[in-house]
Length: 337
Image (cartoon, rainbow, N blue to C red; front, side, top):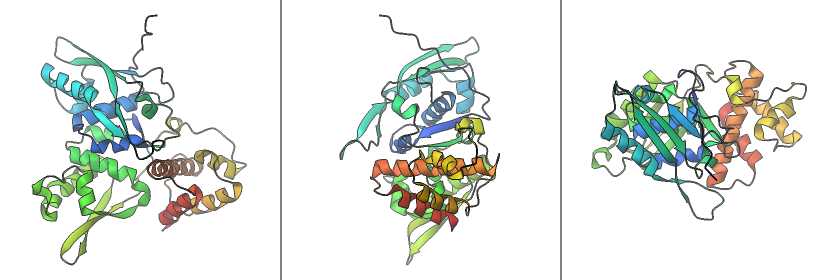
């Protein structure tokens, strides 16, 4: 039987509104050797698919679209081949809590076609592997985070991109310390002698990342060194609340339900895993947190709980959480301040 042709998705909206919906296991890709350009291609792909339609896993980049995302006028044939070949050929490690002391290696894309017009611009079709579909589609059980595609397409440094991902994944903490050696590892510069001293690390990476993210994205934050004696042993990050909620309610797939039973409505954001008594405690804490209302406080609280629950689920894949209620409660108490 002939293989059924997968019709490519051409568009799901304007670039200014496209939202990257990334499952939490994919945040581990900071450990990979994907380049900034390849991360941008991956994020553009994620912003263009409908995560509830796995049958449509092929995406078409129209002529000139990829060039615009990568900030270049034209891409030569050799450069394009190398980028797509590396993106398709890279084997990446993704966390999997179902494996005892193990890991899962996957390839993300299985098919790419490119066609060039007379002006030198490329039209590209990209299809993810069936193996990777579990991380791209129907990812509610895995947990996920969302951010606007425009936040990352203008970035010029891989360090800045990874910093953005790291900060967004930890936004719920508001303020936290990360050991300096761990931060160098996350940014994949721990093996370079240039960044061994904090001054050089700060001047060449942290300051530049802070400046670019502050100027080009909605990720607003500050950082400061944490010292032990004269040595810098950690960096303290503080992420400020979003200036505005830019997510569209329809994109969140929030069920249209009445609000007569608040506990039931908000517990839906947590997969209905809390008892009424537990949910009462959770809602009491959420009401104390300053949450930007956006299109209404009820929806804003729903989205907020949904994001926090995604974090709990992500942590559970790394290390099983015995009492998710207590874990979520502690997170919310930290957010209350």
